[in-house]
Figure 1 (cartoon, rainbow, N blue to C red):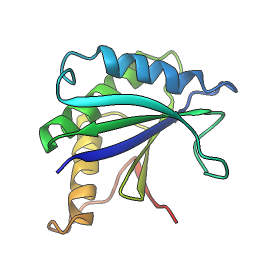
Figure 2: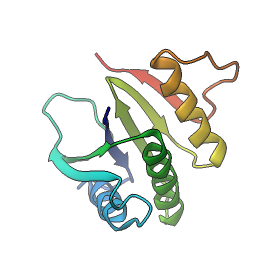
Figure 3: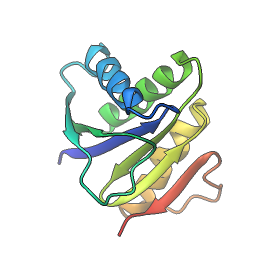
Figure 4: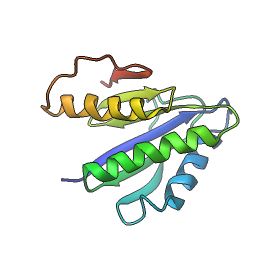
Length: 135
């Protein structure tokens, strides 16, 4: 079953340039090529997305391995920025804001989303990945 993720970021700019930079990074990532469909869409009006973003990056993935590759690519993009932006990832109405890009954060995101899909509860906390519920 395909997994759809929506991403926005707050890089401190008013024009949402960080989200478009993230989009360009993801479409160029060789680990995602062939595993993900990456596109952009305007931010729906009234939605509480990050910063001045005017676009959302939509990623449709075919499997969990592709999801892991996406999270690693987002972490690499964050590390490449002069000012490390926060990235908001939304899946099935549940949002996680990432403000740190360690491998442990990637693992926590995967565990958090797996829990939400009926997986085993995680004894640890979400660390620097904040979990939010969308309405």
